[in-house]
Length: 426
Image 1: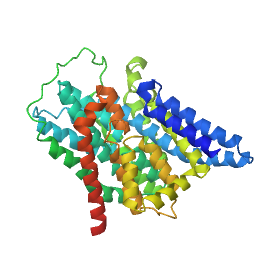
Image 2: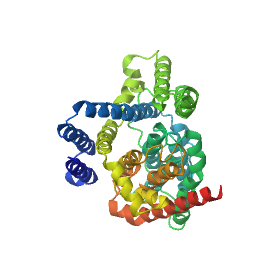
Image 3: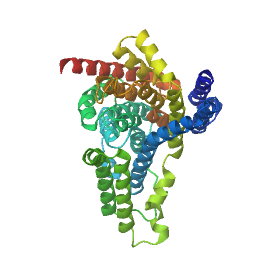
Image 4: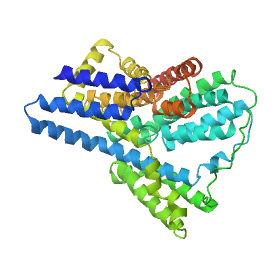
């Protein structure tokens, strides 16, 4: 039975990795893989009730992540619908490549900590399209955005799905992960930036602006400011809500979404149905990346099946016996996240090592958050941010590997060494 489940998982994983080659959406593959793993498990087990109870337990845990993602994505879409991010982007006027590189990278780094790396990548690439006309310059900046967004997301409990998973799973706490990883994350970004300043220089060519698609009923400056400030405040208050109430983070994001829903209904109450349609939560819900949410559901179901049949515990024992070094184990997982998605890797680690082995805020969990969050930048398919950039700008896999991959690897190693040294010193 275990061998069959592992085989299904590997085949599903390969199909996800070669999504563009076989032209099958990874969400569909993940869902089939997840359900098949549990189907095999229950068919080959005599105690059906035990399997059902295990499934219910796992679904209860992973649904928290899915509801959190759905709420956060909807809030960001509401801000975007009101052109809230224009408050930031309209202030960038430089045409110097070096200055633009630093501005874009640092914005992506800090935006990612507040929003998430996927959303930040989408927002920042949209910004770069308005500022840069040359496709190769945009590719360089897009690659830098991927590195910055992943580095920024790693030190925030809401900045990366994997960090959120560890936070929700009580492996880390919000204040501690921010304190421990912000400096290694910054080093992970600064090293590529210092290398890029020697090759990315000159002035950028601005694209020809097209105002033909402007909205006939744009939001007013006051509406834009209200929604932007409210949305960012809601996202920032989620860790505070969890600390004060001890409720899971998805409850904080849902109450925040509810408040934003009320606010947007009130500020657009004077408009007719057609004019207010694009500013509603219902419209934002239609725009969120639902396939990504279903992908996480499918892959987490598959991982939970492997955990339930005891395979992750065996894998943990093998890594401990073979590598015998905590840093090597975690850095290997981080490097692996550049080839395969980091979500199942973190889910696997959560299944392999319980809180009795490594308690909350242990060195292992903090280092895992850094490595899986930033290691995915080495290949463009290694993170949600990279896949988004690849889709938006049609970036070539080999081009990214030659021009950005080695920069990401240098930053990854520098940040990892910084964290190890920081831990030993303090």
